[in-house]
Length: 393
Image (tube, one colour):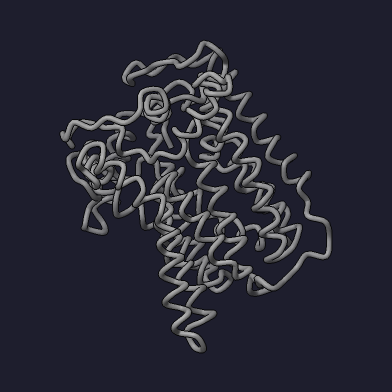
């Protein structure tokens, strides 16, 4: 088919088991990488390291995991100094869930790892169903494989928010295409309580409500649209209310980003500056024969941009808005002086990119296998580097 059709229904049972089996293989690749790192790689002495537990899954608790871990244990704090990294920059739902699991007997470390791993299994099941409804079973299975072996997919199993965010995003679209806007808005609100990616769900939500009601029921469009937007942003404004009550700083989560962005709250206003910075970094690392793990993020970002442009006609308007938003949000908030660091884990939430590539590979299985093979090798390398504090997406 030339266009992914939201009215299309698969004639077969949803292939949940094959999809989860493919994902399981990708996790085996990760486990092998962790074993390799433990045996052959030394810890990066230039990084500030810590271990939350002596158990093997300590390798999944790295970098920002410590912030979520600390918030769950001690709550939020904020002293007003936005040039010092503060926990208020991290959204609250994930730490709340960690704390909730500790109340029923889990350790903080076990809860922090269990939540994303359960969430990604649920997310892949919903994603499989969604893609089966939009196109067919083969596309669903290939898309899940492409996502599972994506180099940054290790963050779906690490103590990060990507799994929760993906779960809420695919649930949002599942109900959005069915016209159940209020339910979709609730999932958008949960996503917004998890990470800033929730912001890019607002445009698809308004678009679909307008598409249904603008020509015939404009009053309903405004009323239902306003109510849905309020619900969809609830995760944000409830967090802002908490910050105002606790610290008299409702925008502390925004201002605190300056500590990660070299003193800037937002990224560079100049579109090409991140590319210039990335090119300069790559040149330096090549000249000094140093492994530059962040170059992968730039390459993947450009690939995603190319796919969105090339396959834009195969995406619905809502999915095109969402995919472009996922790429642009970190570009304008995390680029500039920090280049493309961590972009690979930000952009992988743009699941329609995997869907259209999966649809393209449906008649080209060799291409799907090649992409998964290369991605799987990169997943192995990235997981090993992540475990020893060399790479953070």
